[in-house]
Amino acid sequence: MALWNYFSKNIGVDLGTANSLVYVADRGIVINEPSVVAINNKSGQVLAIGEEARKMIGRTPAHISVIRPLTNGVISDFEMTQEILRYFLKKISGNKLLSFKRAVVGVPSNLTEVERKSVEDAIIGAGATGAYIVEEPMAAAIGARLPVNEPTSNMIIDMGGGTTEIAIISMGGIVTSKSIKIAGDKLNDDIIKFIRDEFRLTIGEPTAEELKIVAGSALLVDQKLDLPIRGRDMATGLPKEIVIKDSHVRAATAKSLKLVVEAIKEVIESAPPELVGDILRRGIFLCGGGSLLKGLDKLMEKELAVATVVVDDPLSCVARGLGVISENFDKYSHLFNVSPKPKDIRE
Image (cartoon, rainbow, N blue to C red; front, side):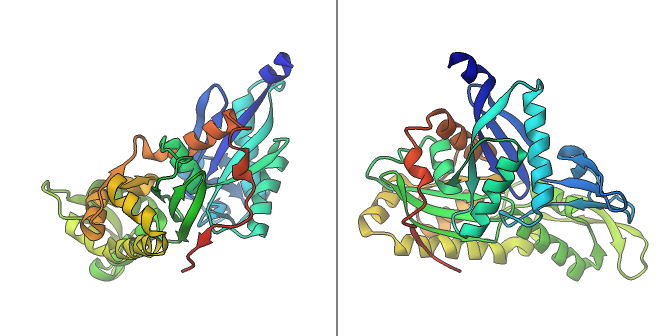
């Protein structure tokens, strides 16, 4: 039995819209790469996966497509998702003897049964012997070391690439939750549209992402955050460079951030009064790549009048939680039973 355990590991898979992370029991997070695939349209051959494919975005000839097979946390291209998973598992195993007996996978809280089934099929098709679905807010709370099994409120907001997951957790379950399709990718789209409308300049997603990271902020900041960017002038069609200020990025993303705050208010309003009181006492916890936007925690504090904290290492919070679950499989087995559903506030 010990020999079987040596050659067969449980894994946690955070299959994200922007990045995918894989946690191997007893080893920690071993994969953290973009969920991107580059494919040759003529031959159907996969040319690159992960970081190598991400570098190709916006820079390929017509016969090469760079695909992001997950949209808003949902599998939009099943075959390419399976290719990504196969690549990751092969990269981990190294030697062919190592196998993966159980995979714990994080998914958005509002997925349909069909969407959940596609995730399970993709994981099993990639080489795992079993797939167990856990909702991302619960995995994030466990990864943040919150006392999820105690009778107190644990309010977690996981702002990823495709979705923002908002949930209130108590007694080992999600009491109320909401999943909205406003997250990192939407902010990038907002920036691209703003630059196009205001400056008549066309830029790509990588430039918008850099702008968001370097000059983006949810509130007015003290330091100057200007950034020169290059793109195509819409009037002449020629290359052009302009300087974008932090105020421009803030104006571009303000509407989307307001919608996120409104969604958080809806979740709080639908929670039992005792748990709302706990939120005021314990605060709100932020994780996911979107939580790294400068001043986002302060914006939420200002709008909600509740202390808001960004958890340690927010990018890997969900993956760490899935890893804890995979290492303590029996303890957290109740999380795999998705019925009855928690109260879900639809958009």
